Amino acid sequence: MIDLNLCNRQQIQALLRLKEDGNSALVPLLEELVEAAKARLVIATDMVNIHRLQGRAEAFEDFLRAIEESPKVTNRS
Image 1 (cartoon, rainbow, N blue to C red):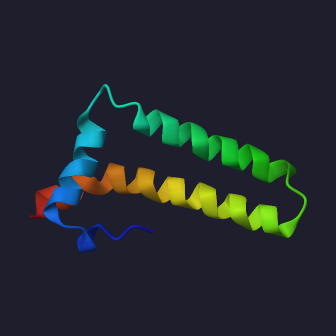
Image 2: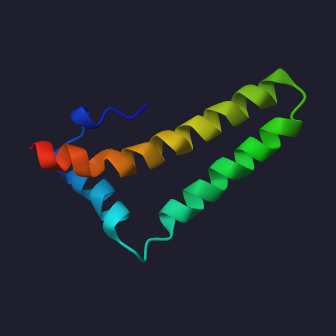
C-alpha cells in the first residue's frame, strides 16, 4: 500500500494530475493491467507464478488507489 502521508507535495500533485487529466491514458492502462493479471492468476498453476501475479495486481491496485485518494491528501494540507 502506498502511504500518501509519506509523499511530498510534488508527488501528491502528480497523482492528482493523473486523476484530473481527462486525457490521461495511464489510469485505463493500469486498470487493464490489473484485469489481465487477475485473468492470468485464475489459470496459473505453479505457486511462483501465482505469487508473482498477486504482487503485480496488488501493486497496480495500490497505485490506482493512491491516484483516487490524492484529492483527500491535497485537501488536508
